Amino acid sequence: MSNYENLKVWHRAVELAVSIYKLTGDNKSFQKDFGLKDQMRRASVSISSNISEGDELGTDKQAIRQFYIAKGSSAELYTQLTISKKIEYISEDENKYYLNECKGISAMLTNLIKSRTVD
Image 1 (tube, rainbow, N blue to C red):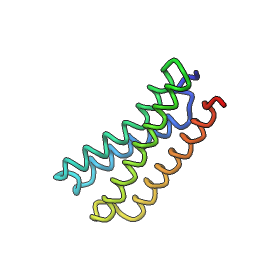
Image 2 (tube, one colour):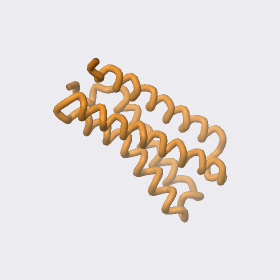
Image 3 (tube, one colour):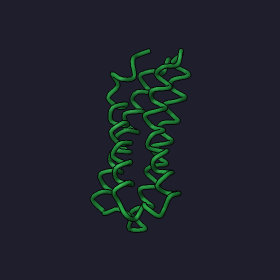
Image 4 (spheres, rainbow, N blue to C red):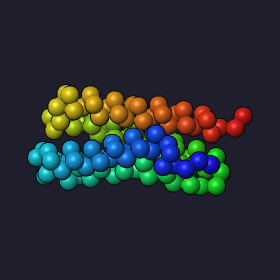
């Protein structure tokens, strides 16, 4: 097992969570929409949390399970961002940036899962 603090995907996921907190805190549209704001924050935090949890577990099998959960949280956030754009809470540029981050993190997790899979 490696140290999750050395994983680029963990750092990228942490930065995404921080950015989502700022986005939903600064944006007036999210001020009254507590449900969506909370869901987006929880999903974003879940990505890095599951990466670190998985990396700290004792086996690759356990780690891979948590990495798949992190991928699921990334997809959840992707959907919430898509909805945020459609209801005009965020701009097209913001949407593109965050969707690309979700896709990038998901791709990195796919590679991490492959690297931990024993044939």
